[in-house]
Length: 90
Image (cartoon, rainbow, N blue to C red; front, side, top):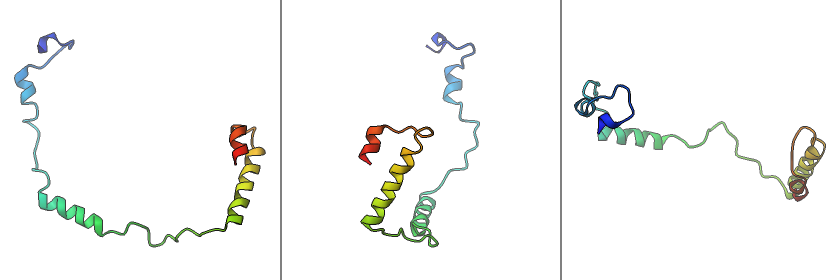
């Protein structure tokens, strides 16, 4: 069947079965090493300690920012493409 494949220089079945025999095998990681790696990753903090938590803003401040966003898109139509219907939703 190998001879029927559209390859110029196919390998025979015996070569295919033993193609990885010449590769070096370092044995890989043991189960204990894998468990140790997973445990050490769980001990690390999930967030950067230097990072400040996000500041909660008021509804009024959020709406003001939204108004500024609408103004930005209205006056940047030549540079930024936005659907007018989407802009009206904002």
